[in-house]
Image 1 (cartoon, rainbow, N blue to C red):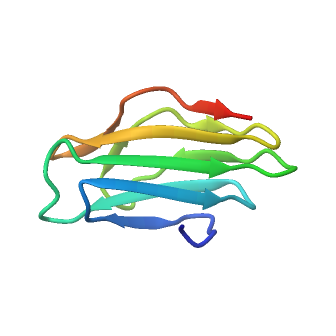
Image 2: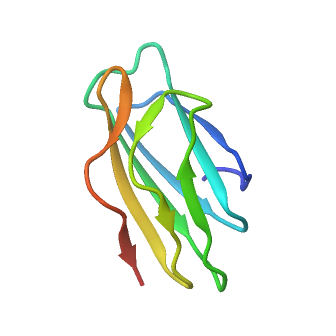
Length: 99
C-alpha cells in the first residue's frame, strides 16, 4: 500500500509489484525504476475509489510512463498493468473497472 498523496513517487525494485492505492483526492502518480530493474518487470496499480470518483494521471517525476489516465468511478476499484521496457513503463491494457 502507498500513502495517499496528490503526487506520489513510487520506487519500483521488484520484478512483480502490486500497488494498492486508496485515493482521497485526484492524483498524479509517478514511478521510478531501480537501476537494477530488468526489462519485463510488471507493476499492477489498483486504485480504490470510494463514494467520490477520483482521477489519476501519470506523472514524469520518475521514469516515463506511457499509459492512459483514469477517470475514476464511484465505489469501484480500477486496475492497470504496466511493464518496464528498460527505458519506461508501458501499459499492457486499458484500465479495468472492478465493481
